[in-house]
Amino acid sequence: METRKKVKELVEKERERFREMLPEDRKKVFDKIKVEAILDTPLNLAVTCDPTRFGPVVLGRTTMPELCQYSTVLAIENLWLSATAEGIGIGWVSFFRKEDVKEILGIPKHVELVAYLTMGYVAEFRDKPELEEKG
Image 1 (cartoon, rainbow, N blue to C red):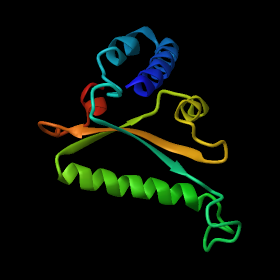
Image 2: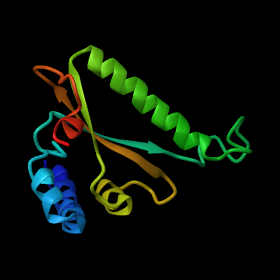
Image 3: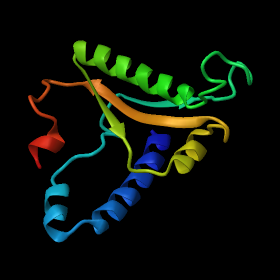
């Protein structure tokens, strides 16, 4: 729980930084939106990509090194779809600087942090995403 609290502190700082960039009318809307559930969900998952894995010569990645990240994002999408089918909600936390979270989690410098996800069972899924619903 201590690790989650550290991540949440970073998120709160970045959320406030973002909020200050908004015009007053958008701040009022933004303040009503829950944008993370770091302490509220049973599972937080950091998803990483190691572009050095398997060496310098890897099919596909040798000419297009970004395929490592693309494949990781596709794996997240598959996880998300499977989780949704099982009644598990996922949130993609993005209000932080990656290097700060990597430091908290002890992720090596050469490994990329692709996503920080919160996961937990939900009572229902909304017809529209909350961000769309609230404008």
